[in-house]
Length: 487
Image (cartoon, rainbow, N blue to C red; front, side):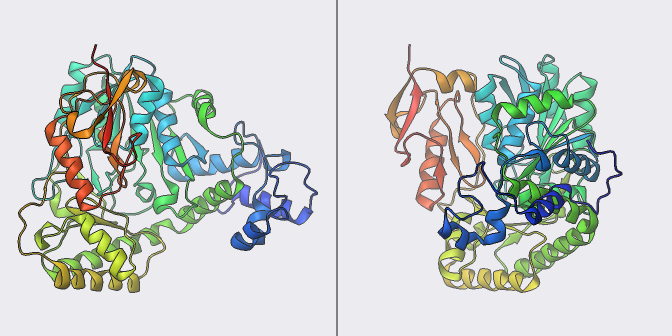
């Protein structure tokens, strides 16, 4: 590790790549495209600079599995910028950051307390390690039909009933921008000898913006998975895993190395490095602008009538403790259309690609790359959608996004158990052995080990009819489901 004083103006990986590029080294190593010469179409698509930067780990460029020089420096700078004791650069997306975080704190048969509206990556981690989920069912907003944050008293009850649990996991924020009272949950966890983990896939900007909800590291959480490529500006699939002093850096690195590639992409690593520098130097101004744009968009959309672009007025001090004002979430039910229908119309009729539509809402993701003119185009298109496609009759629209699960066996046990495939309509009452979800947002409707009920089947049928992109099961058409064999 270098002894020089590091500053946030530096980008060690980027600088090392620049030095390396000037050296014109002859490559007798992988990757086999040899700086693009072996794959001219790829070089033409991505450009010379990009393929020349797609290089292998080597002494001048360090090694992601065991960083000792430039990657180590980049991680130290990231930890400093995010107020963490340690930061790990991740090239398997925030999925790998979330899974490494969970695998670092729970083992087979141990309990973890979590909301059920978590991303599929959390459930995937439980399948891998065999930990037992203890769900805190989120409250639901009647009007919006969306799951909210975790109520502190519900977390307290789960902790009292499961004093042997190892950790509590919190979404900070949810996809829709809703935050739980993270500081209180951290204190509760720590007072009961449990760790607190945060899935901050949608909260990168909390570390840099002003008047935004508290970040996990500031709230005292032990670990956080931060999706730099979402609101932070890095390349898709690049992410950070942050840890506080309570975690052993060496242990977390060992866990990461169980699943992370040994051929970390320098395109992704340098994008994390450059984005961290950008946010540390200019993040405060950048995210103030994003919040202003979102507020402007909310006012304009609410003025159309029929749509409800929600914000801080939802705050209730508990299950909606705070709201992320950069999130442009819009409820569409009052114009007689499901969110997914508005999502499809925006893309098919107006060439506008938003982040997702669910049964009652759409989410337009705003970040440091947005401008006023795109907001105006979106607002204009939403006004047109209402004029051309709205339906007076709301009946037949399903309002609720969230159905309380009934856990029969642990996710790992169910996933690996003997199962049989049945037509979906014949599965009520059986135990599911696979995942079913709409993606995005990637929150499972069913996970392995949960009982299949009629309301869940009705929900899946309705979501398919409305055009939600359903993923998860072995049968891509979702006409059949794998269920546990009855003994």
